[in-house]
Image 1 (cartoon, helix red, strand yellow):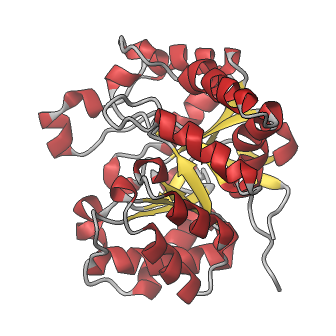
Image 2 (cartoon, rainbow, N blue to C red; image 1 turned 180 degrees about the vertical axis):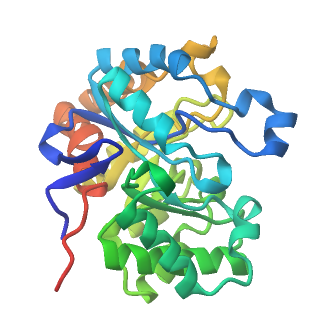
Length: 317
């Protein structure tokens, strides 16, 4: 059962305080030393430059962002909270791990119970000396496979979520292994409604989307603004199709921005207001043409669904 609060970097906030939300972004990250050397555009390390995009996001109606940067990809929760406080938004920070190419050194051959304990320490006591509590657990899997170390992470994240009530949001590579992730989580006893499966807009199998939603999981369509993935029209059509069966209430959206070129503050061209200023009007036009309740569906995917997806779960005594 979902609760009434979301854990932001600045503390617990009532879900009623959320206007519109992005489900998956990277606002501040050092990436990894290798990535930083080879692709410096993936280092996002300026509070001031990200500020322009935050202002655009707020002006478009948004006030909450889930930052999915993990410890193996250069997470800095103190900087995230600095951004949240300076620009007056809510940011959820992530505990957990990225996909296997990043998390292998932290997870391979580890005991699930030990990894679970490490995660719970952050969730209960805060990240290192900051005292900042993450509000979401992340784990990722690789393209068309779940590696042994990724499985350790999946099971540990499931156990940490069950005990803490903190929801889970995953990385799927190109939308693959989503059902396998869900199967494993359910095997661990984690309810499907505690789970957000990300990057599913990259998977063109609508029947898979329907099946995952019917099983109770949330799906994140979060590659929408990125031209290389070409998922914008698919996302519009899938939301419309899911809404016909009342299944859109498990869909959340975002941009998964992870490069300077996506952010206007860094000189990029897309901007953090793209979803609300460009995608949502396109979605509205499509839905109205289909005779559907455009405003109701938009309010669901941008506000009501994130409230449920990212709320802290009540823990049974």
